[in-house]
Image 1 (tube, rainbow, N blue to C red):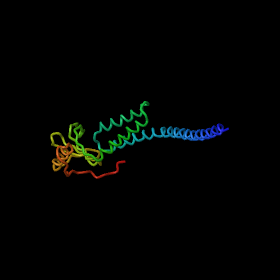
Image 2 (image 1 turned 60 degrees about the vertical axis):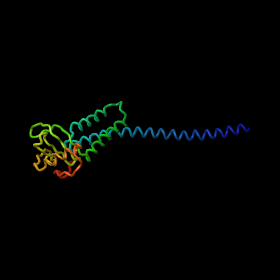
Image 3 (image 1 turned 135 degrees about the horizontal axis):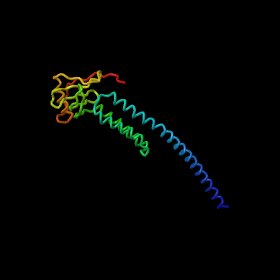
Image 4 (image 1 turned 90 degrees about the vertical axis):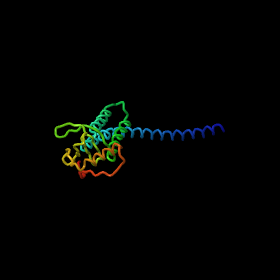
Length: 191
């Protein structure tokens, strides 16, 4: 009789454990269903994020066009690869957004090709965040900036030659940071 009482108590405890496990199993099944729904929703979101990034690069000032275009092309290619997990796709897209965000508050000088007056030439570019994009020919004879209002390059007066040269050298870390006087186009709504 004593053994039956112990077995009854043991069975009651097992029944409570089984009931708790059933609740946990039901909760896990619900979570798995939610994960599948989230997975179905996240992929279109990632695709839309890539489209928005591409639109943004198109209306932004034209700096590092090849690099930025390749980054978007790689993201589009990544989306067509089924072996890449959704989490990795999302991580790469957010990483691209982070890179674009950093462009907004950094200064950079680099050499590249530019098309101006039906002529291609190699110039030194200077990018001040997203505020201004400037160029100087390698011989230093011509300087200019990207004019957002006309979507074209505009030649600058000679008074800005020395400040632009100093700014390029500062961006290349050849000079310490200093204040520079350069024309900055007024902001506008480009949506």
